[in-house]
Image 1: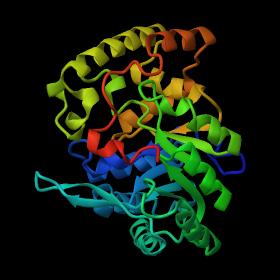
Image 2 (image 1 turned 90 degrees about the vertical axis):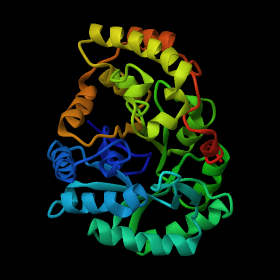
Image 3 (image 1 turned 45 degrees about the horizontal axis):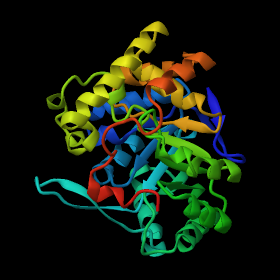
Image 4 (image 1 turned 30 degrees about the vertical axis):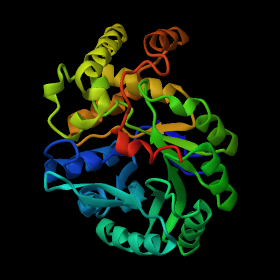
Length: 329
């Protein structure tokens, strides 16, 4: 299944591949298996590969660069930038401040091109809105990169409706990437109507709420990576949300699909202007996610799902408090 990204954008796979987990974001990953997973996605015609230059401090782009060698024309590369890293308390790295100053973007794209081993990036997106740089300056710098042929299209991520309007008035923007799932529906109030008015497509990340909607987690202790620090996966919130997942599991059984497939199918059913990028680092999960496109949801199915999971029912915020200020600005 392919869909047009935005009113005047390119044709891409409706179900793409989020590659973040291939660089240790959610537990250990195997580089050889990650490369095989990307190659399998391209073999199946699912060309939208999503990454960021801060995933694994560039490691994620290196992996993708290896996987697309000799088959660049089959891939649509979506790269986010501007999210800086900072030392974490455990000795690792954690998200730091955001920098989308024109000088930074012009420098960052060069390193991404080298790691990806390509001459251009299809979709280049500031990972967050920089509160210290007017969005017009950021988009203006990206527009220069479009003119130079270094990038082909401009995107936004986790931006407010007002910021989207200002950006689109500076240069065409074809996509907004933001979290959108049965558990994260806040964009429906203002942001989604705005991008539809402007002809901007939606790239929905975390359609499985980082794996919770797959039904694989049974207790908080099952989570042994950075998801354990997210409010929805903690204590009482976890068990309240698990009750919702069990209801979705029952609906999925009636549709002869997995809870994960039902959740992805729901996102895709919300409009032909939406594509989704569930993360996977294994071929098995990739193929399961792709099969979501074969799940047909009737109006009655949608009503049943909405009755179980109306907007706002999930317990807990989607990010820890310190990250919430970076959203919708």
